[in-house]
Amino acid sequence: MANPTAAMLVIGDEILSGRTRDSNMHYLAKELTKCGIDLQEVRVVSDAPQAIQDAVKALSQRFDHVFTSGGIGPTHDDITADNVASAFGAAIDVREDAREILQAHYVASGLELNAARLRMARIPDGAELIANPVSAAPGFTLHNVHVMAGVPEIFEAMVAGILPQLTGGTPLMSQNLRVHRGEGDIAETLATLAGDFPDLSVGCYPFQRDGAFCVNIVVRGADGARVNAAIARLGQELGL
Amino acid sequence: MANPTAAMLVIGDEILSGRTRDSNMHYLAKELTKCGIDLQEVRVVSDAPQAIQDAVKALSQRFDHVFTSGGIGPTHDDITADNVASAFGAAIDVREDAREILQAHYVASGLELNAARLRMARIPDGAELIANPVSAAPGFTLHNVHVMAGVPEIFEAMVAGILPQLTGGTPLMSQNLRVHRGEGDIAETLATLAGDFPDLSVGCYPFQRDGAFCVNIVVRGADGARVNAAIARLGQELGL
Image: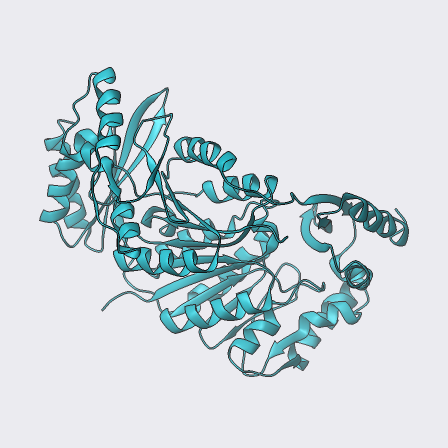
């Protein structure tokens, strides 16, 4: 059976203006790969209602899961929850279970659950809450869209909480060879290998070291023995 | 006049699997902001023909510029040029001007311009070359799509080469205030400020420091005096 598919939607002007360097994409990509869910697309959009709704609709139709990051805090520019709800035509308001979580947290912290903070209890009808062990304000899952915070510590804690509840697939096995030659020298060898092992993916990633071009060759596949066989043949052919 | 708009398309399985951490998005975002081109969307797609073509079509129709990163090397998984050509229905083959650039480079390096390397001279009909001062193999601009390498040193050199040729807009001025309070404490103040300065964008970016929640408040706009006025008022209201 094919692995489940996923997309990620990063929401935030601060990423697109270059003010903030996103780290959630790389974290999610690694975690999904570990549990055999294939991340096939990432989109970054601005804090604009139409952009968020269009992306949620497009991605939730095409992929098994959509993971969003950002825009669920208490300020006026936090509009993710409302727009995910709109994308599905779901009603949204302060929900009692979320309000209780926030109230308990703020009572314990000696802070007031004011109108701004209460916005974080706005949860679409029919959504399930995602626990936030860092700062209480929950994320939520509506249909196949998992809505999470953008602050990396909170995003990572939320991902760690929901991934065990999702059905994963076969994790990819991978091996790599580092070769101190240019891509152009080994391209034919790689193309032939990829043709002979159609069940594997053969990737070639150039980088520079001390002014010389080198490549990392990465062979990936569900069957570890096949990956080993391909890497062994490659080593022989490249005289390593 | 409104600033020109842009999207970025990152192409590569290695980003989506978490093997490689993309850095080109953050670089491009900062550079575009400096010259007043508004980056409004980023997509990351896999090395799959349909995914690349669909994204190129969608983004090139909606934005003034599309900048792509990745997939223009000599190996079998480098399929960006062919699929950008397909997206526009343009023919593509080895082009003489690109072949000459490669030949001169490989002659000078004492390397052979073999069949794999010659693939990097495949340029769509009607495209203009983008210079590659690092490793010679050119990128290209076809219509409003600028196709560049994924290796960060090359991507950055190509961006530096083409940005001066594009018509920019008004660069955004921005100022920020760092506040050692929770978002929820200052959300109302910010919402009122954003309402009173509709020509500015007021962003609020929480982070954690030694277990305490802090925020960076960023005020952006084309008019520096207005940005200053908003920041001054904010400082007064927050008692800073």
